[in-house]
Length: 91
Image (cartoon, rainbow, N blue to C red; front, side):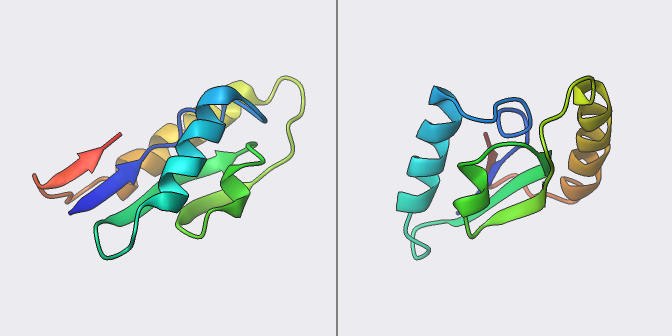
């Protein structure tokens, strides 16, 4: 099984309940059970940088850059999700 997490929460929260929850779940999924990828793009989240399945770049959280990060991440995600099969779960 393939499991993909998108950038949404990791690019918005530097710290937070949902991103912490996701990072803990992702770390506990055995590689023998699922091929996990996190398409984080440009992310500000501190929990995400500890994941070994992250695909993206940690950037500093600075004022007035959220709009730019969202646009870049949307493009990144569109490119990365091309050719995904029907058996892949996208969260």
